[in-house]
Image (tube, helix red, strand yellow):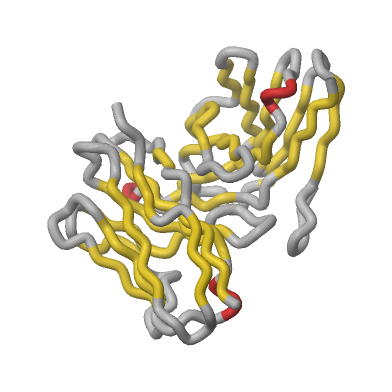
Length: 113
Length: 114
């Protein structure tokens, strides 16, 4: 879902469960999307990316799904671990050949042991 | 390979004072970005450099913010005078390769304006 002001969407899961984090992007012309993970006090860290000519991409324990029809992106984390607790941002390349990323509002994932 | 370095990590100033942040990108990365991240929000691009030239500064409040990358490597971001609403984390990122999308972020500088 969307957030307003300081209220991040939150997702709380049990260790070992699968997590799904959703993101709605704004620009139908965006050709590239990235998921970043941001832990407290650190800069965003790359998780996985996907180009607009794909609808699914898998990494290690993570999968990104892209639905261009409804401008929706999701991040699936398998067997979620306490170390996965962080804020997750999706970002879209809205700058074409300028490679400019526009970030979404983020989702706070909390993994309970 | 060393990551993006930023300093200072924390800064507290009073409103109307000035402040400067420094960024050293990953070696060889031609593109450098400065972002502002307000608590609870995603990073917002302030300015993008390609080598020592500005590619995009459309969201930089130019009446108080300035940035430079004189030799195409390190960069500084300055705020003068600071306002309360400038309290945020200032992130620097760099990108290497002509067709690589991925941006690598530094740890950020947390600015508090009182």
